[in-house]
Length: 510
Image 1 (cartoon, one colour):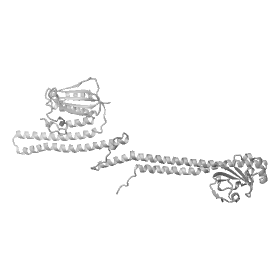
Image 2 (tube, rainbow, N blue to C red; image 1 turned 90 degrees about the vertical axis):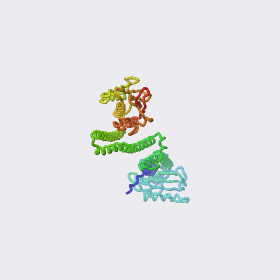
Image 3 (spheres, rainbow, N blue to C red; image 1 turned 135 degrees about the horizontal axis):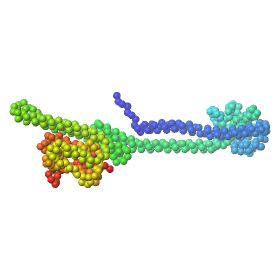
Image 4 (cartoon, rainbow, N blue to C red; image 1 turned 60 degrees about the vertical axis):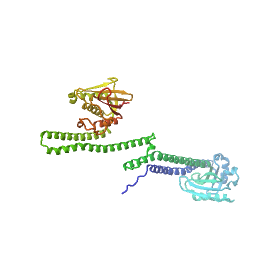
């Protein structure tokens, strides 16, 4: 069964932003829908204050709520309506009995085209009324509509009427007039409110610009995310997949090496890890091939000696054959032991943490152990350590102490094994700019190889007469450990006298 493909990070990112954008858009929609009603309600609240003040004056002055009384009242109390465009008074039958426009405006003011929206305060019911246009009796229709509203639609709550007259926006509030707790008529307050339309338009424009800006930012960020982050990650995934499948044409990621950011660091790290794994795999294959080849020789010798042993009757010959068999068995055992230990050392060294250690102290401790070694004592070999700059100077490096001890021990063991009785081994420590040089000099036969670097190869076969005492892995292990410490090793014959000289370079701790 094929596993369902997971959506990409970019798709998830875009879907998440779309969801957030949709939620914000929904809230924005409701917000924009509520702007105009809220501003209209503020106007209407002010109108209700005017209606209440007017009612209080009518009751205090005991004005009759009829055409004569209201006309007299309007002439004497016009200051109440200075901030308003128009105030109209209607009787219980819905007929007009007073109008502030009668004071200074001709009656033809009502010849206009209107669109009326009625709304009860604290009530969500809204009614749209479109009046006839371009007719002489439009004002008559207008008053018919007002009368219908008063008689049929005005309940307990005031009504808010939104009107558009020749591109001008008006807010009207219609409410009952109570005098001595008795309904005597109705007051309709009208006020021009173009600022509401302007405010709504400005807010809509602002929100629209904001939405477009946010969308543009998301688009730019998505392009950036895809180009500079997701696409490189996709390339790295394809690269590792091609390595895993051993593709003949792996994905080229060279363009990412020049980047100095996290992606570049990640690319470099993955590439180095891949090369290291490939190197270890190749090394393991080479190890196996070399080991099989090295074991084949003593096995052939062992087989031949064992076959001859059954046919030989003389004691001297049998002892000689037994020694050969014992020697071959020991060699095979040494090869397997050293080979197994070498693989363990390489695996563990890659996991071990390095610390600041004193190289001079380690060399002197290992040297002191070798001075007490039975082989050194039996050969009476002298081992001398020389600090060529200052005996009290500290030589700090970054490394694994046990591995550096292993390097020093292997090199000293190699020097001791090829030294004759009463020979001297000299170990010199020298600081050279950003690294330390440790030189091992012996007085043995030296190297006979034309290419001395061959001695560091695994299972190198051109050995001296005491070849059976070594597995051929010691110097190769030393070389690997030094290289893992970012150092290097060289071998040469001594210039001043007969003998071998091995130089180890290790970087200083900084």
